[in-house]
Amino acid sequence: MKPDWDGLLLDARLATMQDGGASCGLLDDAALAWKDGTIVFAGPRSALPADARGRAAQVESAAGALVTPGLVDCHTHLVFGGDRAAEFELRLQGASYEEIARAGGGIASSVRATREAGEDALFAASLPRARALLADGVTTVEVKSGYGLDADSELRMLRVARRIGEALGIGVRTTLLSAHALPPEYAGRADDYIDFVCDTIIPAAAAQRLADAVDAFCERIAFTPAQTRRVFEAARRHGLPVKLHADQLSDLDGAALAASFDALSADHLEWTSEDGVRAMAAAGSVAVLLPGAFYALRETRLPPLDQLRAHGVPIAIATDLNPGTSPLLSLRLAMGMACTLFRLTPEEALRGATANAARALGLADRGVLAPGRRADFVVWDVDSPAALCYWIGGPLVREVRIGGRAIAR
Image 1 (spheres, rainbow, N blue to C red):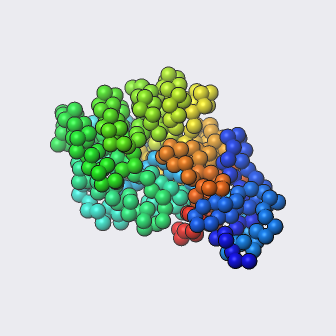
Image 2: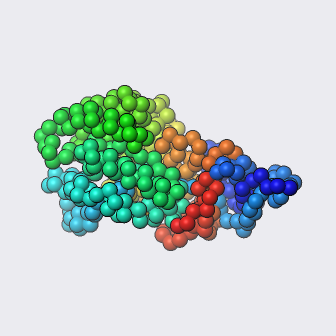
Image 3: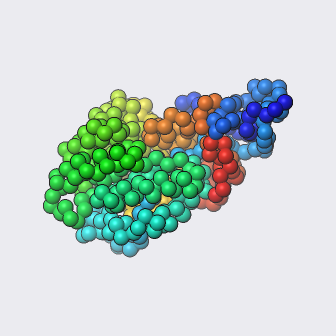
């Protein structure tokens, strides 16, 4: 018989994520088969066709190991110049995030370093960070701009993000975050800068097909709800979905604002009210929780987990990898932190880094192990979702496949 499957994995403990319950759709003694980058079988080994081995060009055994969908990191800022280690020390000495930002540090310092870096330099600096995520099981990553804050630098960041995907074979979704902070040349002229974002940067990113979505930072130290609304209206005119950094430091009704534009997600959410949660539930927006930033900033106010659960809002987990407030290079560690700091269950954390994270990027073709989905999966050297969150650091990945192709890490 001529093989018509590219690969068949046997003796696996599959976390399919196909059901919405607490089990992660866990199947023992299961099998996974793929062809042309797409899953063609995911289920009990006993349900395989009798001629399954002969149908596969390659047959492997997982030897009882856990197999999950490839992890999806749905909120990162991994393309940037320089670092902000000095600010880490300032925070240890008692300075707040807002105080550092208002003194010219924070995002502004990353803007200076990023603007000074050419495209090749940005690529060289950012590629190792993407490799670190891949080595820990990430097969799709969202990358935001937001450290350029002028048209050339913002578009350069998005081009670098696309190059990273091509270089590593990893899935990349790009998000235009020009409304991240006020650049120095627009000091005291925030509305003028928003005009520039809406009239110049968003149209350019859309015309060059460099952005898959548009984001903004709606906060006291960033942009007002009215300014954010203008950014979202411009995104809508250009056919781009939106996301929002919402309610991280204060409640400006950011989650509700995002929901009013049918946002893919609202992210952070520590100060979100129950009205905001209800609005997200009605809009189908995903709540992206970012425990790395919570940890790095030593925050104490938890996101409204009970309300998110009660209203059925999908919960995703991401690294928020960035130079200032979450220099976190492991989505698996973010999952563990979500369990320890936010009291998620390991099953919720895994769903948050797979199925729900894919939903937060508007991707219906991954995050679940099921026929017709992309053959993005990870074979782990553990046997349960709890173990993924239990181990703090260390290599647990045995194999990563993206579109069925084994990826060098």
